Image (cartoon, rainbow, N blue to C red):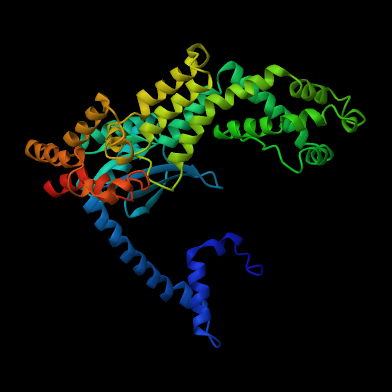
Length: 426
């Protein structure tokens, strides 16, 4: 690894463990492959093995339906690349990458690229297409839903939540507070001696330096500063600081003013109260522990409840925050599939005292859109009564006991019941 410059994280790959075990089982005398073997015949074998593995994914697409995911980024050569992936209960699979550097990413061009992917996967297999909520992708989504009436365009939940946090940190008090935190960080971390002093006063705990392009980092930075509030105040009022070479600098005086400013810390607490619950939702939708579709609707409701409770229900304090959240949620993030996901999540469905009308509206919109055949819609509605009343397998003691322990993505028979019925009758 040291000789060839192989990245150290290679040892975390599952394939590395299999490789080590295979070499150990062979024993002494194992012959390594030649340069030609790695470059040609072994590579061809691996390509064929990958194609075979893809067949399992393709079968899952046809059986359960799938989502097409689009993600744009820039490489080290500043090329604009667009990745296309396919997600299903089998997992996520890379489809292709397109170099979009030579043309503007207009809505029409994105529509053409996404339409090509839909045709490649099969229209009947695609439940939704997920992109970020940039204006060109919004237009492409409208074109897709017009051309393919049986699929949904859904904006990326993580991107929408990032935009919520961005909007929140544009509020005057929030913006000023974060700018002051950036100033404190910048002053300390551009002076190595001051960094060493900080580490002595914080027991080697660091202040995280913020990245301007990731707004969740603003929350994390303010959270770390708040946790080290006492240490920072102790340091900037200590004898060591008072006798240091930095104490008379103009920048140092601004830093000390911020650290000892009660209003700064009050605004930090406010920021943590309003952004914390949203960051938890962001971690849910941006993680890979469980499928988020069946949880995001409830998670957003609980986030708003947590924000309101942190201010003891004083609506005046959080009304602007709720307006920002609702603007993004109602316009971009609130989709029929999220409502259907909540309905088909037994952890929430069987605990609810009443079902919100918009949940039922979203559920039946999914049924109508995914299969326009009226007879099939009626059949699906009849099948749902078994789930509603916890009849048959849904009433089994083990199924009841596991309602809150396993995600709908684990219980494929629950989460995809509608899609199975729809696809079988198309």
